Image (cartoon, rainbow, N blue to C red; front, side):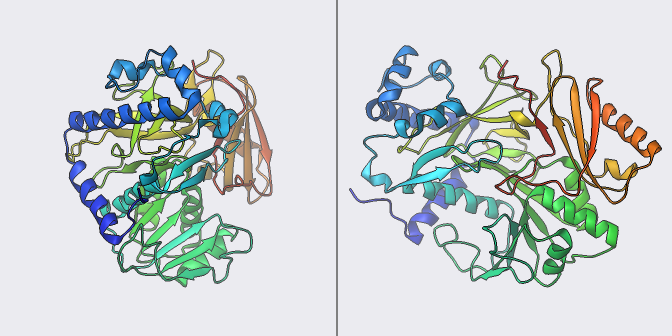
Length: 446
């Protein structure tokens, strides 16, 4: 058999399928997912020796339609297991119709990267989901797309950046588009502003932390970025306060997607609300509590993901290391499951001495009310000690230091020992992502 058809017609047919499936009832979408999951489990049993014993111990038999109870018996696949097993999880008989095997590598922004394999067929569905994101939010493809992201050193550098003829490849955008302008995040905030003022910026794509820095800089200096309609955020958690800040400063809305390099887009912001719809046609996403049981609306738990179309390296119930909050079915009418909030990685979780988990939010502008703080980051060194790292415009006075400590303590659920440190700059991860909060306390699943 030949590989997947990557013609424009095939790509558009995928969009037609997605346009229809989003309106299916939740139960019908779930039934379709379990049909795909049954086929994937049978493939894993037959072609990945490591899974054979794992599934047998769980009482899973190949060829037998999976039930919800069956699925919950399959052990959760940890990130460490995927890192340790490597290509031992690779199928030894990938269907030729799925095309070539390609490597997907996580960014490693919060630890050791994960190497996973995928197929051209699954990659095409990933691209189809990406196009769905643009279509959901009514983006005008004739306008330019302006991006500020981490790039290889010395590429897309200020003052000119780089210019491309199209938003992306034909497999993602099978029609004419406007140009794409790109700048490296190695440019300072002032340099980014200068570059944006010399480029059309109807749509700006960047990291939430970078958008925040631009917005605060514009508000402080009075600089304007007129004509911005949407800010497309990637790679980091979006706090609600940032959405409000962007409406205030830019008159623009944030539209966000939730993804991981090794599995692709998990969820996209709803076209009508600020919560997220799981992309169930391609992935089976679960949110489970500390006992591995499914969370209900309003509950927070660990995110597990199973790419249903990846026959090169099946990842059954893979724990990304992220936490999310489950939402109720959406009023927009789509049957796709809802995630109310994406809360980030386990290492972004505050741990109290009693083992409690919290996701602290210190706010985008909160500290500006106390002192001229440019940037902040918190690091939990133990269940008793919290370090606040700050970049400031000038040394803080003693009253400001006292008020800063009080403000920090008011935002956390325990009277931590607070250590303040001051720096010339705070660096992003190697992948360009930023973390406001990092915990070095290894609590593990409870």
